[in-house]
Structures are given as C-alpha cells and as structure tokens.
Amino acid sequence: MSSTYQDHQDKKWKTHFDELIRYQKETGEKYPKPNTGWNSLYNWVKNQRRQYRSGVLKPLRSDLLSSIDFPWRTDNMTFEERVKQMLAYKKKHNTLHVSQVAYGKGSENHKLSRWVNEMRRLYNENRLPLDRIQRLNAIGFIWNMEDELFSKNLAKLKRFHKKHRHFDIPQTGKTKKLGSWVAQVRSRGLVKKHHIQALNEIGFIWEGKYKRRNAARKVMQEVDMKNYLTKKKKKSVSEPAEKPG
Image 1: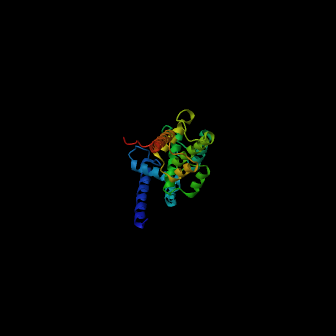
Image 2 (image 1 turned 90 degrees about the vertical axis):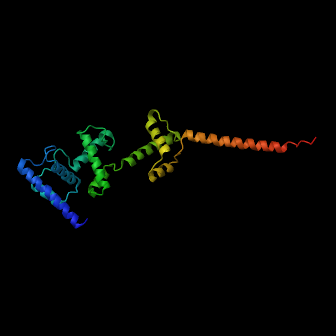
Image 3 (image 1 turned 45 degrees about the horizontal axis):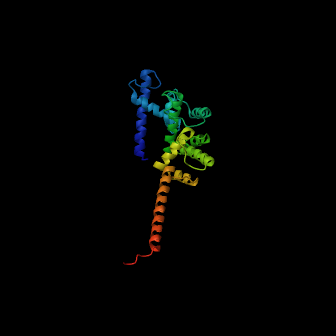
C-alpha cells in the first residue's frame, strides 16, 4: 500500500473522527443513531465497531476513540461472548451451522448468523487474526458451508452403502434428501476436484440405475443382433448350393 494512499485514508478517518467530536458537543450523545440525519457518521461508527470486534482496527485509532469515551458496545457481543453463544447453539441444535434465513431479523440467532458470515468474510480476505482463527478452529467452526454439506452427505452415503451394498438411494421416505442429493450429483456433476476424488475413492457409480439398465439393454440388443447375424452366416455357409437346372 503506497504512503500516498495511506495518508489519504488517515486524513479521511480523522475527518470522521472530528465530525464525531462535533456531534458529541452539539447533541450531548456519544454516537449517532440511525435515521437521525447523521447517516454517514452513523455508518462510519458502525464500521469502527465492526473492525474493533474483528481485531483489525489500528491501535492508534482505537486509542483515539477510547479517549473520547466512545462506547465500543451497544447490544453487540464481544468475540468470546459470540464463541460461547456458538457453543450453546451447538449443544442445543447439534450443529454449528446457523442459518441466516431460519430466524427472524433482530433475533439472537439471526445476529449470530450474521456474525458467523462476518468471520467467514474476514477469513477469506485474510483479515482475521490468527488467534481468532485458532479459537474458532478449536470449536469446529464451519469456514466453508459447501464442503461441510458435502462431508455430511458423503458420511451418510458411506453408511448407506455399507448397509445396502449399492448407491441407488430411494428419493422417498427417510432417504429422500440423500437420494435427491445423489441424483443431483449424477445429473449435474461436481465442480471441486477433491469432492469428485472422495466419491471415486468409495467406488461411487456415477450413472444411475435406469441409465445403467438402458445401457445394459442396448448392449444386450447389440449382442443378440451379432449372434443372429453370426448364426445366419453359418446357416448360409452350411446349406448346399442349388444345382443348376
């Protein structure tokens, strides 16, 4: 990052900081609330808290904000409190997958799901501190939902194959979801090479039952036709040629 760009960012940050001081003097409040005519400052304040919670806010900036009694928390939780909330969620639901669409806006689980997505975003951008990555790894945090769902379905598929000795899973009853997933894999394929490799390693058959049956029927028809032509040829050779009249 060039020094010119960094100087510009520092100057921009200082402008917002000075605006916050002015807001405090004019209103007597510590920070602006939404929809009060200070939208730009409100968004900046939110961003400072988010960076602070994620551990990426520069120490000098956090010190300056602390010097004016800036409240780092409103109804938001600290990182460790969120981790404890995750563990409580896992104990109750037997999973660390917190769906954002399953819970109403404003609910604690919805807030937790947004925090989970924020951790994933920072991780993917290489902005999440190592100690937090290690802390989340220790509780089995799900960094990639696609890999997590594949692993779960692969485990179910292995159990089914061990019991039934085939991969033709009915798309009804208790196996409906797994059967639908297998059908989707067969029809659409998979993008990730390590997913394909994992299925190949357990001997997964990529063609479905009906496709295999049709292919076998076609082969048998070709064999029958070949046998028929062979017999016809032998018969024509074994029959004596007609004598001329």
